[in-house]
Length: 369
Length: 249
Image (cartoon, rainbow over all chains, first blue to last red):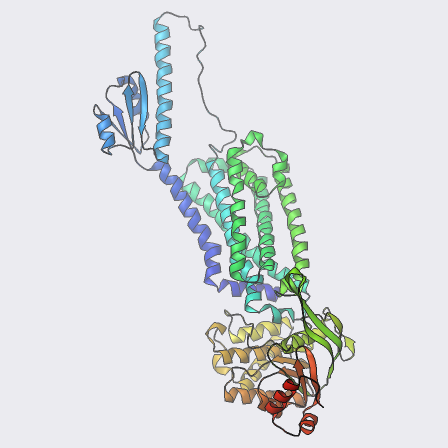
């Protein structure tokens, strides 16, 4: 059986398409997404400020501005904005400050931060005025507003990115190997001599499934490690987030990734058995990779405090929550991690039993009955 | 020796449509004899070979090897069969010819040193030395055919089932292959092969099975067939029998 696993690994490895999907796709997606995120965090933003705005507020903007902002104070701000001199501008109209512009993602973030500076300035101005009116300190309460995300994970972007890339690569990574192992072998008629060897179909099936699993796990682990390393390079807070994660969660995350990779492999094998050609297999499995993306979006929409235990039973939502938790949400217990691993593994076992049974039928193993 | 008793095979397709490919076949393929399977395209030759190999299970009837009913889980029985699956050779494009033979030898648990000797012997006998280390994707149809035949022979089975083995072989290679079959016959192996080359039948075979629409039109020795049909022209015999569509008189 080991002979078969090694040969299948060698044969698949020689296929450039497989190597590309297994290693290059995760790397390209990781680089692209990290670059995308870092670009919108650090790329230059040109901001126009209306000269008629209170000088104190303008100074406040200038003092607290980010490195990649370029603030220009002008009295012809609207004209310059229309000429394309700024990404957006803060314009005074009556007593209203309007952030006007064609907002890209980065500009939107800067506008949000400027608004927060304005709120602080307003509060300080109000405090000063109240004091100047001789009102006692314990007069009307003035509250401050702050945001404190649960855990160390900030706004969850690291969790989203990790989960998104993991699910993307786990779906793509094992696909060529799975298509080759069953649908491809049926198409090329190489399954027939293989079924003639003195090994039971169950063992042949196990060996082939193992190859699909190994390629899937290789691909997914590669992507997870790569995305963490790159994020550590680009985002300074990531190191702090990861340092806060206990070792037990690292181990359980690894097991959860392995379990989900096994589930994805089992599904790939199932689809490969159902189809008789490489192309059919790819066509049939593509929608599944889209379904996997539900996980990250559910985790983004549902706040960490509203995560329910039933969500830990349903892949891909459970693995996504685990990844989000690992990346800083920090609301899941070790038991929750174990539930995710056990529930995913249970589905894998059921899938394996079903597909193993299917492989014993000529209709699925050879493509006819 | 392989014995088929009242064997039939039906394929089931979508919407419960069935297609009966073999009908009530009772034949014995004896040890030390070469038997040719003849018939038009779609007569059931390939299905019969796959059924003999155990790759297909009969819908009804029984297949027995040396008197023991064929059991897919009996690894000794499976190891005793070498199958060549036709011009659609079923080889892995990314492996070399040598890697194919080494892989299957390993699956049949043949020791490494022994495998080396067998590969050298087969490559000499079938003329494969020049391309043993080339990947299959780069080989011509005839070369692939030789690799597939060698794969069926690497574990020295006692029964050889070959589906149109000489298709695509050049004249030199075809002669090498025929010489190999005669040598296997001398070694008391059971050989069953399908072919459309009548000179090959004349050259190699002891017995002939003629199939027509899944049923046996004739099963017997080649010499008896010549005698009954009063000619040794196999093309003529076959055409006449298929035209009659019934058992030879």
